[in-house]
Amino acid sequence: QKEVEQDPGPLSVPEGAIVSLNCTYSNSAFQYFMWYRQYSRKGPELLMYTYSSGNKEDGRFTAQVDKSSKYISLFIRDSQPSDSATYLCAMSATGNTPLVFGKGTRLSVIA
Amino acid sequence: DGGITQSPKYLFRKEGQNVTLSCEQNLNHDAMYWYRQDPGQGLRLIYYSQIVNDFQKGDIAEGYSVSREKKESFPLTVTSAQKNPTAFYLCASSTGPNYGYTFGSGTRLTVV
Image (cartoon, rainbow over all chains, first blue to last red; front, top):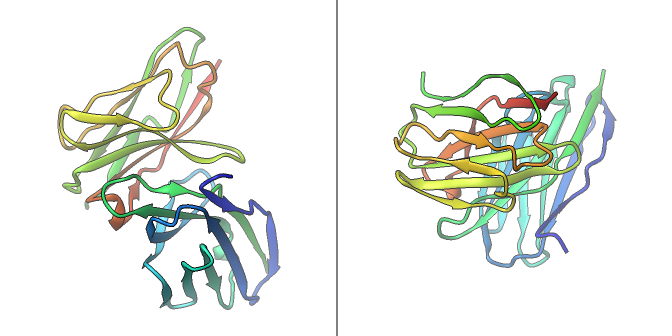
């Protein structure tokens, strides 16, 4: 079992839809959870950052962490064509261990 | 503006050659990382460095080498021992992994 599992998609939704992206993980030591957005041929950019369990909201984006289920989610409300990108989840344990990334989910928002 | 710069953007290598990818940051970050990205594979860690003059192997270090002589610089050499080097290479820096990474714009390496 891989440490971080993420459905690669592709996921195609109409403009204005609510998008749900998910990752599961196996390492119960993970404490820091992040979502990155990567446009084609560009480097990833940090979108959301969450420590431990709970929700975090930033504009149209909401990140949720459920440590009991080892499951994290990113919700995008009122999706826009400019949200079309690959979304990568990433996580790390305490200390200085490097981030472990999911494979990324490719999202297309159709106008 | 602070940031992380990778060069060149595109690189072509002949079979049997070594090539070096540049990564420079002016964010005063202690930690730097190299990832390789292949279609359907996500980001795989090659090497990382948490302090000058020290670095550790990641999951796929074979055929690669790095140095960290300056805080700002973390070059990656793809050696001829790397059997399948064609990929998109990403460099990142951080004050620590728990604070998230800042990525460069990547170098696309192609073997010709």
